[in-house]
Length: 172
Image (cartoon, rainbow, N blue to C red; front, top):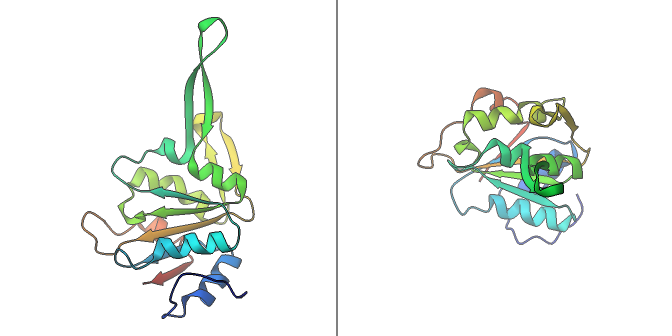
């Protein structure tokens, strides 16, 4: 591992193991109480490695459109409206080889979790049925991180399909 200047006290010797998991292309979950530095660590690592980082915060209002994308109505010729496709956060990160941090992943609704299944398994792809069945294959540099505040009010254990696709766990 290269020496990186990070604003993080690594009392659990997490950085060397995290470095191995990132290089291996693992789906990585970081879980712990609020304020323990899970997201901060990912943000600092991305910055030190010059990786673009997207963040999605799971709430009751998070939609599939935010993750995959959607059509947006735009004024067209002769005053007619036309739909223009806009990629969602996950699709942008996959195409660009960026990192994506899904915060509060154990607050994610089932319909959102199901979008991630083929992204998190060996296919590393997503099919955008809403956009003519477009298939997006993850850039080799794409990395997925999930953060979870374990036993936090309103959260639930992620379903088995997500849990089985997480290669590496870190407890904070």
